[in-house]
Image 1 (tube, rainbow, N blue to C red):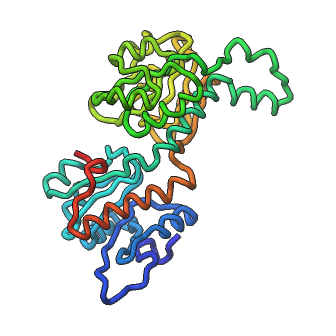
Image 2 (cartoon, rainbow, N blue to C red):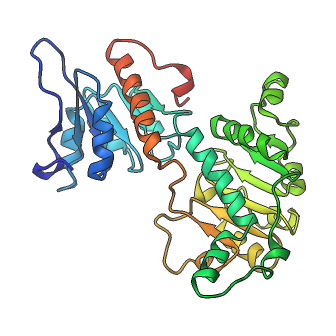
Image 3 (cartoon, helix red, strand yellow):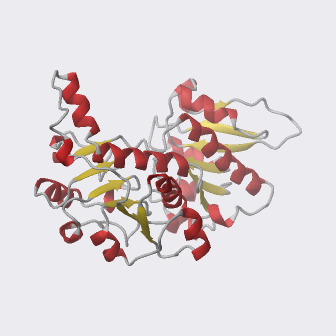
Length: 340
């Protein structure tokens, strides 16, 4: 971790012939992760850690920065308005709900994200949660460690993935990577998205087509949430939708916590409305210690780590820095990475 109070530059010797562009990183990273990010820093760029010592310290930094990079910290109107030199705001990952888009739009500052850079990691984690819920993995592990040998006890609530209908809600980069991996399990895969794939893409990805949202949720054995969080998707999975699901169905959410109404999910899990759930994200993070979902054995939880692999760090940093480099050269960010 950078010393000196967190406000100084990280790496890169200053070259007098090169214009130095400043990147303000709002999140505090582990030393190991920071080292991996630094490896990807292009020539002519300096990376600064946000100074959280006083409320105004980060605003002073924002006034002198060219780019703001955030992982989970909010980008406020105050930061954006302070940015006299600000050229681009960049989200690490794809969920940009903590960036104040109205303030960025008012100052004509583009906002970008690393679309697709972590899609493989999130897709693999999604498959992991599906299998772990279906095969009662955590329960089996705990029982074996406690001296119980549940060879027969878990069979009635364990399932194969092969042949099941999987409904993917949101068919962007992550949803498509999930579909590709499901091909190996010989599932019947459908999806819902406001921008459907072409028939050729559907064939390549191994999906059988798109369905209306409610039909997809009502008929799927596995419902996978891969859509972004916005006003249309907040609370998407509510009591009515859980009631309509198969009682043997499971829900997996590796997108954003508020897409799922946690009170409704707890009710569904305790009343036998659905079989189980795998959650990587929550309405409040870190999850509250008194969250009733923590008491259930038919839920498998991970701490928003679906994309948190060593492999993705370099990919995400490369994409963010490449977008910044383009802007520094007077070029536009490719449309696929732009938040519209």
